[in-house]
Image (cartoon, rainbow, N blue to C red; front, top):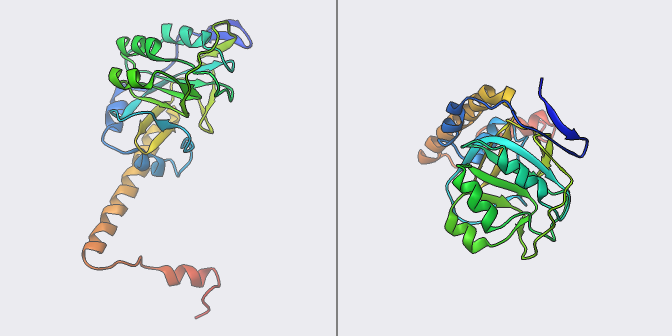
Length: 229
């Protein structure tokens, strides 16, 4: 049983279950679009969560942080609980007027071996973050910094980009966006992604052969009663 330290709204869990590292490595062979297809288009963060600068792909298990709007105290606590290869996923409760972190905190994350940072909120010091190079996804940048008082929670479910993220979920991001793979569904998601990629390869072969219009359009329209014969 997980040990909860603190009280509702101001608490954290130190140890979480993480998926086998082989799945993180496997993700790097895909795009976020491929994995979104494997997820049947669910668990895909909305367009507002975007890569802040060109960087490598982001992949790893989530350490989740919920902070009060305009405060980052519990993000500091989250940093103290990460392991190399983790991804910090931060919910800011709709607060976009104050950056949850900047170059100093991201530099520490990078030194600790984090695979990346995803913030449903804003960051700052974007030029310095780009030089550090660790992948950072957020809704944008703002120059103002917030408080360090709390409350907040670490390693409880958070909402990020319209998706519920649980600690230990596998998260993956690239220039296309971010997807979340629930730990119990990893194998099925990869199988679905592979099927869709195989179908796309077949379609590319058809296009190369001169078939530019997708087959079966009239069959679908007949089934919907649009075409009667």
